[in-house]
Image 1 (tube, rainbow, N blue to C red):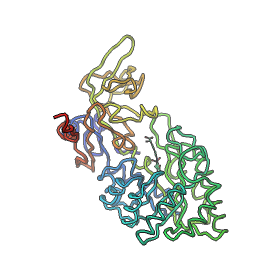
Image 2 (image 1 turned 120 degrees about the horizontal axis):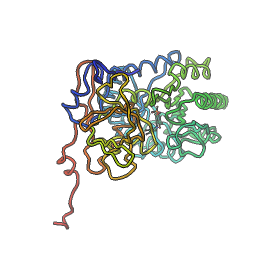
Image 3 (image 1 turned 90 degrees about the horizontal axis):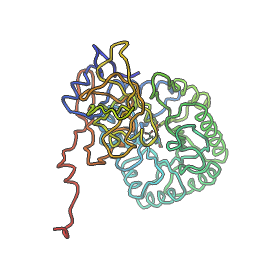
Image 4 (image 1 turned 180 degrees about the vertical axis):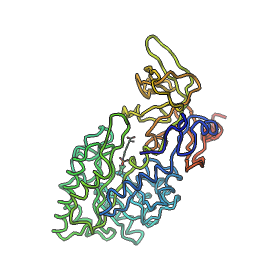
Length: 423
Ligand code: LLP
């Protein structure tokens, strides 16, 4: 459930009318709901209650400081994949001891930054990374808290581009190599083995791959501990899917996911658990609001040309992702619908949000909202075509704040430098 609802015939974010925000910040813009972020965080945490995990929100899903600070106030930790994200988490008030550093290619500088900032744990993904981390830690005179991301070779049954747990994917150490690598790490002067981690993909709508991966995780921990290597922490990753197509999509609820985790780890409730959800917290806590520039009839196609484009929301172009698109003015019951190809102004055919989407008759100047755009929306946006990044607004009750302003053209052009030799 989210807090983007029609009220008196107009779409609202909590108690704020979207049309009012549009006149204030102009379109396109992202809008986040505090109550929805809080609700998703709570529902997810409650689903895993008996295991009492530290919920380390995956910052990559939406890294706006306002979003991070909202979650920090609820006690969230953070899962980060770069020094930049690490700095964001710290700036939002998440202490290093609640920050997990993930990612397949962390540099020595990034590892040193993490160690310098009391990182909770570094999820190591390869032996070369382990060696680099050991060197960095020894040179700093500390021991790095390490968890290995183990690749369980499980098919997550999600989109190929966001599947990460098969042996052929670049992520993690191979399952069968784990005992040898753990034993090596345990003997290294700069390494303290603290845990194990798995993350098999994103937007999972089937719980069985989770069950399979966690079952393999438990078996591996049992084997490692039998060999004398304690693995106190279990990081079960993120990946639980959300409903994008509300009318006919019902991914498992966090409580169902929680049941699977509890079943697999029955008897292990006293261990330390961590998880890294991103999309589940942020996706349906955000919308992208856009205005219709033109409605163009071309042969038998009807195009809705918006002022938002693939640079603002790239998921449809990159993953063929579906986003509900709704008019900001609520259509009266029984209003006839027409099929529109919903597109942006960028000069490539990939700049298409939806084909043959049923919408009431739309006119230039009308506002629409892309639902489920709070995760992997603004963070993946770019200035392609020298289009300013869409601003981000966060709502709380009847209040709202600009969480990131739209850059000016001077801001944008001012970042480039013309070399001296061009006079
Ligand atoms: N932990 C790790 C190590 C990850 O790589 C990810 C996401 C997460 C946690 C959070 O997964 P989530 O709970 O959000 O599914 N841009 C794509 C999604 C890429 C996900 C990458 N990793 C999209 O727009 O669908």
